[in-house]
Length: 193
Image (cartoon, helix red, strand yellow):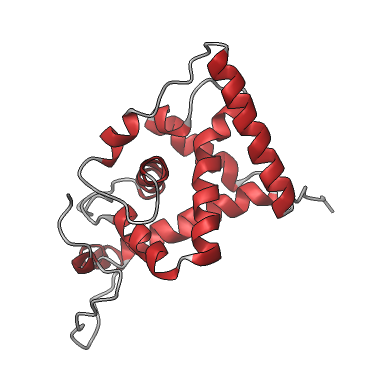
């Protein structure tokens, strides 16, 4: 039976600190660790509620990579999947929010841990999907958990958009939905800024 390396919360924080120190050293050494000006380009007109612009940009690209574009399905940008996840995190907060923030930052800097000289948000789309697949099949339970948590949120919020229902063979609810002002549906988001 194969033993999987498990990382405690304290170990995760130590690893995160070591990663941050390594990124700082690379930055001081002049290695290609570009600034964060590209995050605004990824985010566009959307404004996150509880995630930082960097975290939100990572989430947008992770969602795009995990869902992809198939046939006549709306895009993840059209369904505002990342914005709905951010809205849900603003409603529940607490440990789920902190874990998602840590997961998104880990995902952003994970390529550097593997010896790469770029971040998740600077990778080509195929490379991002490859990294996510690597996390999915990792021997590290923490990496698999990060993948599973982000994927669950992406799939859940994408496929709860009524435009995606026909693709799943779902005809919709038998009872007309009522607007709930505290919810996380696309109607609750308002227009992008």
